[in-house]
Length: 420
Image (tube, rainbow, N blue to C red; front, side, top):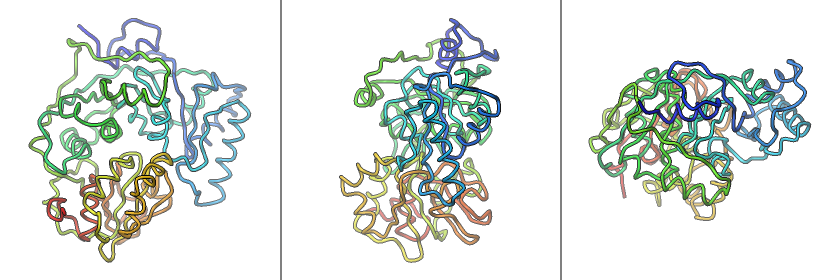
């Protein structure tokens, strides 16, 4: 019996030729990461345990500016403490100067490559699976240990294969792909498993579009996401890094726990209703619902293609009265690209507020927190009660097309209904 890509990556990082599903093994970590919310506790635990040096300063990356400008003095001081710790240990890859979101920034810098095993003290580490890597979400205490020793333990998970077939209709995006998967698997249907996404409908997507799908693996309980690296991935990396890598693929006779086929050709634009990412319905089922805020951005849909898709619907129009449109590019790199292409000026002319690159209001910290009576359509990854502020607020998750249509119409509506 052949091996899944997950088994191959775990085996290669545990010094073995083969590992079986269900085994618990110790693995070496290629890249260890944390952010502005998780790094302070990791550093505190590192010090309290008596650790005196990191395992390898070149294999640590901390992106601590996801919520800049910081909302209060305490947040700023905690990040300053992490900055000092990085300087003390010679960690050069420290980013806390408005560079934006780690899940978009680090791949764009060429730090994520096929076959790597990455640990990040953030639940959306699964995003890196779009590049054929294996990203694991860790707690801050676990990350403190990894910073000291460069290893962790993992139970070799089962793999669920999700195969996308068919040709998408207009206005059906990778966000619709993954929301349809959420509906099929539910929020815990892939608990502690790898979700391996494949199929001809996936192959047609750009790497940036694939990130959206990999990112939301955790919303189904997955341990990680994985996509077999292809020519598009090779081209993406060639423009960002010359570091060699060894890509892995699942064997043809690998054993999957199950295979889920999703026919994209039968899918129209969808969204997730409050208060769960798997509460997914066709947009037309909830059309006419009043909207007070629309958010486009974050680590799920804050890349250049997401901004471009939104403007396909909104270009030359105005945001509906009573709607706040907030656009949050994922990184400063994406912000600069959007500025150079004139996209930021277009958004401003439409009536949008442009946030600094980063998380924006997704986690309910700042830059667009919701009140009791708010109804928000967002391209984010979670819509649990209180996620973006008040637990009474209503959050719908959608693609940039659907979000843009809501911003212009003032109510939830299909992109086709108001397309230029």
